[in-house]
Image 1 (cartoon, rainbow, N blue to C red):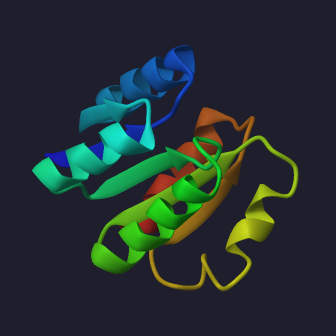
Image 2: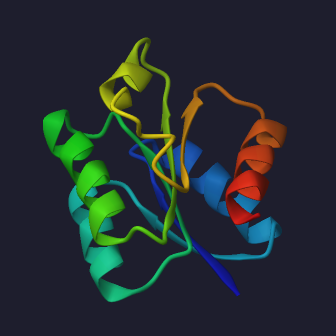
Length: 120
């Protein structure tokens, strides 16, 4: 079964994403903080991590970057509703393998297209 870790601090958004991925056939683990996400990554292997970038400033960005280095085979989707957030990852983030940025708000069809692209 495909597995996803969803890292989102807004409970309603986290739950909606979890339900969506479950409906798409994923085993879903959800975390509301970077600290909880780090624990979950230590516990298991995920094929996909979907994370908000606005979870704690520099610590969040560093965690995302370190995740990409320590788990290069994990597909990673970074999402944010903050204007200019993509610039944080301007250093070739999306060109470094299975990494994508998704601007909030997004349609589920957009998310599904990005997931399909990363899985191909």
